[in-house]
Length: 140
Image (tube, helix red, strand yellow):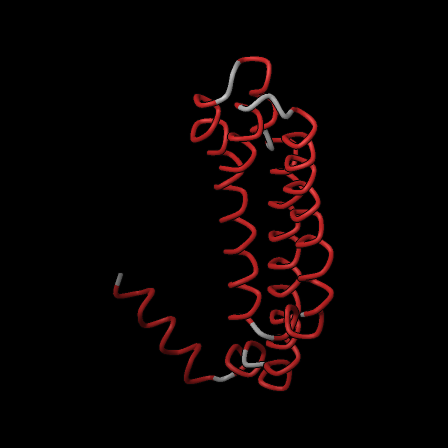
């Protein structure tokens, strides 16, 4: 962004526009390549998915702050070059969707692991449990 500000200040509008497109393309590459390169780990490894969500949210944070950081140094006709707010929902949704997919995957694993331990019906039929529950109810 420093180079973009310098190019816009020096009157090289084409170079400033190219640098803006470069920043947008880098965000698009992140959105495509990072999930693809970690596709197996994002669902199974909670730490990897948490780092990915954090990276997405950090990029969102940086993109939101860019107009405040660099916009003041640009002339009014070039301030749109520091706006990347249109990328924010896409990056946020990307991180959240992978994180929620990981949570659903882990929930399904936990459900299948605990399915053989169906405690509910066994306890309800146990006479000692029912008697203890009745005694507690009478005491309260």
